Image (cartoon, rainbow, N blue to C red; front, side, top):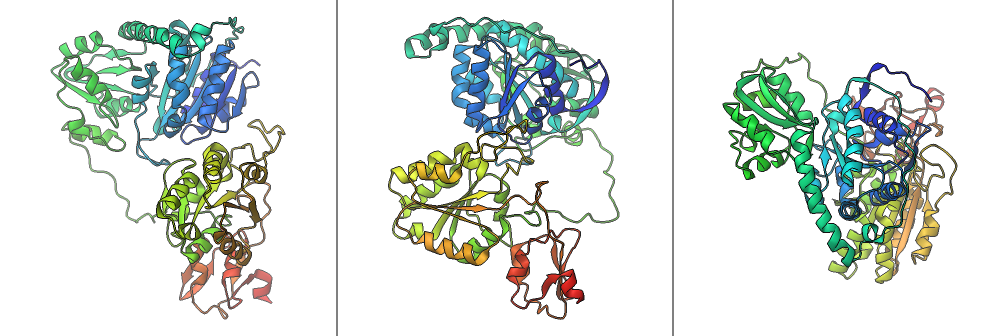
Length: 586
């Protein structure tokens, strides 16, 4: 299809997808993870690109590598912690190299807006010995994707495109172009290149080291790195979103902007350092650029000693760290109410966490919407580590404590996360004769990242019908004989099943099945109301932590703009005070 060259505002993630389209990418495989999710959603809109959600990031990277070996330009995307999951194929793909170009996008989350840690993915490029490029705005997202494919094919290597939350989710002007259609590259059987048994891998390691030397030389002259000379009193070496902060804080300073952050140039930085009086390195998280400079004998007058190792930078932080006076921030007269994250009204997980909290069991948690069950008033979760750790972590917890520990502990994991990395943990329990209780919270979608399909929903990324993976059948095949299904809003039945399964002397799985309240196909009931005459101010309805319920003048009140009529609060009330509007008026 033809799309004329135009200038427009584009999100960074949307621009990455546009760059993939224009660069002739044929295959994209990813697992959703904020802040990277929209890239694959957007690229799926281009009919020329085959796009899919993979069960996890490791599979996604392996699909992309297979497509590259097959002769097609390929792509996979993930958030920073997803690269941990995909590290196994990444390190070996550095040895095999590619056939057609392969680009891996990793989206870091400085500030931990939606993540459980704040790791710096630049270390992966260094450790795996693959090049990494880092765009600073949406136009560079398009341009750097194209450059990454060229580097990939020129140097026979996967290339990592590093973004971050502020680049991925901010808009800037881009100029789009046309798609470059590339024929499939010829595939030739080459075991010495692609079969990584030890004898072949030894030879490929030599290739990797030689390739790094060539890439280092390429970095010296690549247009991805550029010098913007200004006032020679201050020189700043920076990359990515920090470049934007630097340019706003010190528009007159001399700047060396690195677009290729691994390998980095040496002579280029040395020459730049000679031209400025004071040299600063501005980067978020770890001192990767600063360490590179110091190792190569380049003086650095200020780096992490000024900016620290934690969180995001900003224009103000950069300016203040370098001694520039900043105007006082504008303060509003009114205090903005605090809005902590909370399970949505009608969330199918709320009833479960209420019951778990009531039973006072240890809850091994996982990554997803249900992580919010750790917050008061529910306060149900004891741990949250990483994708899939709820099940295997619970097994370890119970093996360590022994006795009746398994009767006082459960794991909770979502349907998408169960497919991602929960199945192997469940097999570990059955294979090693454990008897932990696992709850699979099936809300019929991948919820936390914005409603992506997964293998249990029966639809692909492009909403095409697909075989629906049965959670019950997987559990049975894994060796679990006790598999129960319950609606988590049926509190009495849920509590009874939990008590029964916790006493079982064998592994058991309880599937709590109720769709996410935000799904378009879910039909809501009319909002409920509180009859103030019958309300005894016992606050039982407040214990489920629904944002639609609050206390006013000593009585419970339901906000009808938020309530979806799920009736969970109605089940909590022993005095019949919560009714439909018709019942209250009648």
